[in-house]
Each structure stands twice: as C-alpha cells, then as structure tokens.
Image (cartoon, helix red, strand yellow):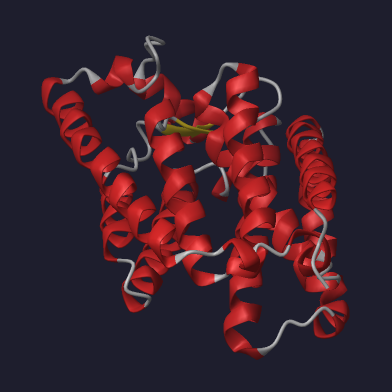
Length: 288
C-alpha cells in the first residue's frame, strides 16, 4: 500500500524533532547517556523480533553502540577528572585515536560498499573524506567545559560533504531506509548550526546513529511510515555521486594547504586559537 505524502512530512518532521531533542539531552546529561546505551545492550532479545538477521547486522549495531558507551565513559572520566586506574586510562590520548579510528572505519566501510554497488564517484568522495578527517590529538578532545563534549574540529564544509556523501550511500545501499537515514543525517547537520559550533557535528552524529540503529533493531517501523524505495532513481544516484566527488576535490586541496601553511590551527577552529599542550593536558592530566 502506497504511503500518502502527508505521512512522509509528519513522520520525518516528528523524527527530526525527536533527534534534535535527543542530541541536546544526551549532551547535557552525559552520565545518563552512558548508562542509557550501556543498558540498551539488554534489549538484544528484541533485536531478533526487530528483524536483525545475520552476523553483519549484529556487528554493525554493536560497532556503533559499544563506541558510544566508550564516548560516555570518556566524557565522565575527563569532565569530572575521575581518579583511579580505570578512569585515568580513559583520560589518555588513545581514546581520541580510538574515536578517530571508528569514524575512519565507518566511512571506509561504506566507501568499499559503494564500490561494490558501482557508485564509484561517491566512493571517491568517501575515500577523500577519510583523508581529510582532522587528526587527534590536535583537533580532537574531550572538553572540560559543560557538558564534557567530545569535540572534533571538523569544518562546516567537511560536515556538509559528509552528510551529502552518506545520504547518497544510503540512497544506493538501502533505498527503503533513505528517508529515515536522511533524518538522522540532517539532525546531526542542523544541531551544530543551531548552536553555531561545527565541532559538535561528530558527537551529534554519534548519538543520532546510535539511537537510530537501536530503534531499527528493537522495532523496525520505518518502512511503514518512511519507505523511500518508490523514489529511487539510478540517474539521480549517478548525478549525486558526481556532485559529491566535485565538492570534495577542491576541499582536499584547501585542507592540505591549511595543514601545509600552519593555518589549520586557526581555520579548523574558526579562529579560536588553543594551546596544543594545554589541550593535551586536559585529556591526559598525567602530562600536567
């Protein structure tokens, strides 16, 4: 049965409103966010009824939920300056490299899938997005300011290209879930714009992706209210991938030029200069 147009508008608007609220709530209540996703693992019996089939889907869900729990633990450890071997271990620089690696692998996984789908131009965009992820620990940190956010100094342009690239990937790989996935991508894109802080994009993306996969695993209602498969077009897919490739190429040159000239310290942070050694001490108090 065809889904009426009004249902797309209502369901997508309501879902995006929920996601924007969810991001803000998880940022503010950083302890709750950790416990929420920790205990969400107990819902795994529902994943069977929700239609999670095969090891790949289970691995995909766990590869998002588990790092989200680590994000929560690291936020508590750094923001509250917790003492003890476990908490001090989470205050070290390896945590930032871990988050960087998860992001890199997440993009690369989709990039390889794009290649297998013949979506070559979008795959090129994905590869170059990996190349242009700012490196830890210089451009990543757990903030000691409210509310202990995971900060990644990606640029507004990188965030936009990532959003467009990922949406194109989902359009190719899972047309049924395109609209629901578009909601989580747009919520993560819009939230930092509302706050005027592009560096919040990654933490917004972490929480929107985690809750989306959890909802799909427990009760997959999205095809009933947001099935986008009737709107799928191979021609649109091809043009979209080309546009993404065109956008990322000049950005790569700009990114590399900023690093080469030393301007990245300012341009990536939108003019907010920060002493790198001091930033490191915030993450690893042992260096102080």
